Image (cartoon, rainbow, N blue to C red; front, side):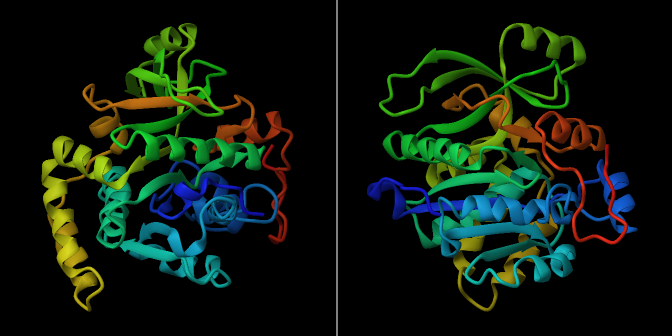
Length: 319
């Protein structure tokens, strides 16, 4: 069932689903389950749906398929054929090669702006388990609404930390913003991606938040942030607009990626202190990141989620 979205927000609201990672760390899990390594976003780790399909079904509560863009790698084409067989209308952007999460986010942003210059985008990774999906997507909708009201801001969703985990991005919230809405938002005082264990313990004691990497932004603000932080990548991607919708679009993307730099979105953009960042805090126990085999088993157990892979020959509990 689709969420009720403010009419003024719905017209130009787009979703970007990040499915381009190779998922190297959980490969021991996928190899055990499938007899071969596969990127975790195409694996069924809980229930009966892959991580990608769970994400797409969740996103559909807020954004229709015609405004949903899946970013993947050309080498993942075989997986996508199966995953999207019954989901017509979704756009797939297949990157020729992996240039990091910055390109994974900014490529679809440039693609969307060429078609809808007023667009607001919400970005969703595919390696998350969400227990309270309706509530989570309402919070994503609230973040998108705040971007429509304050288009110069990039609005993150953060989760209260439950341990001093150094493998996450950490958000230090500042003062509360005087924004109207059902969810409080604070200005981000600082952002730190994957700190040392000592720093992570300090951030945990301070009550800082984990970055879920679910965030909302206007396309114009994101493109400007990319231009300032990673100008070489921006120069490669901005030229794609010339070829948008033409038969040369695929060729142009290959050329853009040929010499594009490798960059990570969190380190290159979110850690930039001049970027106007806001954060809203979600329920600590409704979200977990399934980035490592240990976290897959531990997190799903702690949330009471089934860890039996249904429908897979020989599938068994990962606990």
